[in-house]
Length: 310
Image (cartoon, rainbow, N blue to C red):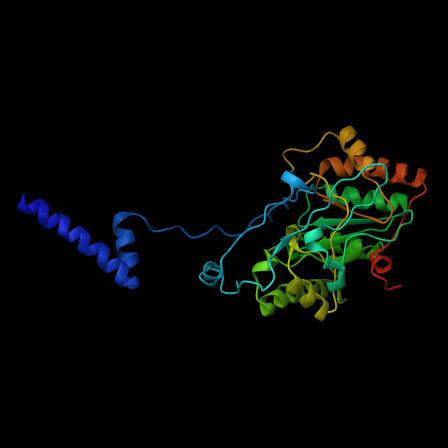
């Protein structure tokens, strides 16, 4: 009995020491086998999980208290004075142009763009973090159809597929900034935000000797008022989209015929369409989409036109 009391007292004492003396925590964690393992090294960038519908399908907002943000493991994380938002745009039909979500009515006043003028023009934009054979097919189609696009890329694509990035530039497409590592930018300080964009600029300059196009798309469409203002301060226009669909999951690709019907049903004047070029479905259907758009009288514009830089 005395032995059990002594053992219990020792265990309780160990717990108190671990709580009051952080340096001892690692020792007891090792002793009892509870030490957390370090995160694995980054491999492939995560696919973007955007849900471009309103209501119950709209992206959920992450709620984080100031105290929680200050104790985050990320030293660059701070609470923004305006809440972080997740962009979404309602799917409309019969050529109706989508409206900016009411809770983001301030978007365009802070340098954000999602929709062009009310004329038959489409802006093709692609978020490309890596190559799986389909990005090259997308480029083949754009070249064959003589259509311009804008590619928002990560530094991973420059490191692993530099020739592909050079091809984007050489064939007249805009190569734009999607950040270097695809973090949640709403959780960054201004310095960390700017450093993330500059890291991407440095990578592109190191490859081409040129400056990356000054268009920024926030990873997963997450942003805040501050983010838009900080981007503007660096000379960037923030470009979102007026149409996107669930094309990002390589293991659950949509049926090509259904995807064509869905995209064409959502076509509208001034459309800024977001496509993931890693999608096998998109690589297959893009020639048909472009053909149908041309038959409908649409032309293909550039972000310079969209953002009034021409």
